[in-house]
Amino acid sequence: MRQLNDWVRYADFYRKSPYSIFPQEHRDSPGRLNFHMITVEQGDHEFVDPSVPETVVALPLAASPDNTWSWDMGNGWHSDAAAPGRMLVLPADNASRWKVRGNRRLLLLTIPSPTVRRILGPTAPDRLTEAFLPLAQATWEDEFIAQLMTRLWEASARGHVTDRLLVDGAVTTVVAHLLQRAGSLERPEKYVALPPWRLKRIVEYVDSCLHEEIDIVTLAEMAGLSVRHFSRAFKEEVGETPHRWLMAQRAERAMSMLKAGNLPLAEIASACGFASQSHFTRVFRQVTGETPRRWFHSTKWE
Image (tube, rainbow, N blue to C red; front, top):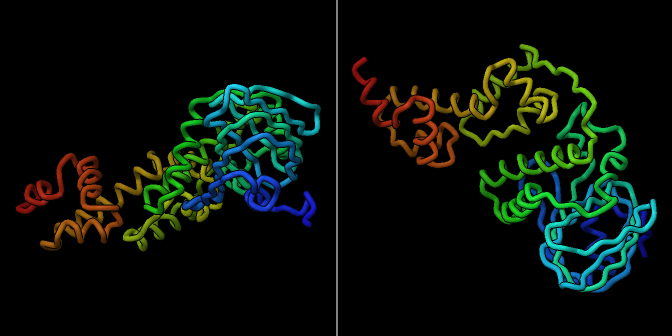
């Protein structure tokens, strides 16, 4: 029998512990930022959850009128009704005890500590357990986070490129919003520059891989910065967000291909890394003010 402090992932504990009596579904992140999600139908129970290197966000989706939960995360017992929408955070590296009465359906989001630190970079709190503890004292309601968690659950079931981009952005927003709510990001941020040699590396990479999927996590890693700091530093150096700049690079490549010959638009869209021909047309119009066909005919005789 494994000891409570032997678990590395909350999801593995959930599958193999007494929680296994409850119907549950698990989903992993399809993106570059690692996280896990669980939906579970719970009834009465009194369990002890282990200390794991993950921050867990618990969101009740439905509950019987008599449903209550009590918890002790090391600083005494707290109790509240398990009302839908009123959530709790289980801080990383902190065991907890639970007493639940009644039936409820929970959506759980588990975020590994390395993911939190990867998102926040130099601004990450030194001790994540203490940083999230203010959100573990009482239940609280946040419609924005609840909507993001629901969207994360839906997107985690698919593998489309837009879903992979969406989940990375959404989990980044969840982490930042939780820590803002907990009052743990109040220290001033350091200025983070994007030196010319790093910007040159990013430009060269994008130029060579423009036909492929390119996400902001990869670009931030190449710059040696967190996603949050990279986005800010890139905009300060270039004058626009990484996403808008990348779309402009794709559109410029498409212009060159349009001038070079009568290639089908679908082929140009694929060669320039657009998700589809309609996506190509939409971005091209945003950049140039015209559709690809109209732009081609307007420049044909120049």
